[in-house]
Image (cartoon, rainbow, N blue to C red; front, side):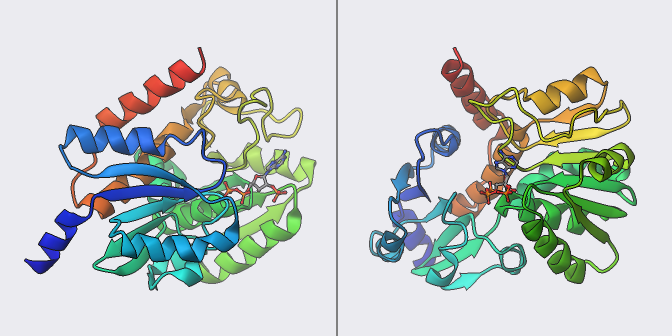
Length: 294
Ligand code: ATR
């Protein structure tokens, strides 16, 4: 009863990050909260300097926030500043959601849930097959984790402009998931070969994001096929150059909107203990993107 009263007092949620003018999280969460008549406000906490983070986390407790989402560039920086971190977030090495449980700040990584939800209907085609993942940043780490943990592919090849970070992920996750082969490369011929063999290709880099909507991460002359699945976590534009190429080849495509909604759904459930109204949130996000691109 005490906990219930306490959670009813908690009126605020927010997103912690920097350069947040384009974030869709407030629109997505506010639409969902309103639809369910949950009396929380979702705000933006733009933290200009990293040294301001500890004070902000103290304020989350003092002002009795229910929690916060965390985005670039603070997904790792918040980790030493909170009380507890879920096993998953520890393995991934990043926290994107903090829940204030009666003064105790608990960190989660719901990006992995976003990947899991986005790929759920393709599970049979991923199992025991090769996967190529472009990128080696925070989003890539959550993606490699989710693909390995929930879909048991035969092999994951990590492709990154900077090979050292790709190698670090391959080494680290190779230990966590010993039954899956983890490779890395940045050699174009090798990338083309790996893409050709893959049943699933995922872009977790920012390549193709507005204002560079004409670019994609594939090396020149890499062909896609209709039996492949292509997932781009970039959501602005919704139809990235990579997804357009994939659709032209007849491949199945998954847009970054699925990832945005999936990670948001899990965070929303952690904050409110209510089911996320997916269709309402999707409608709000699509409306905003359409208006932005007019
Ligand atoms: P996030 O948390 O969203 O993954 P990040 O940690 O900054 O963000 O990672 C961004 C990823 O996009 C990295 O893999 C980065 O490659 P590097 O490790 O070589 O920096 C990749 N990336 C960003 N811009 C790129 C570009 N123009 N070409 C190729 N890769 C790019």
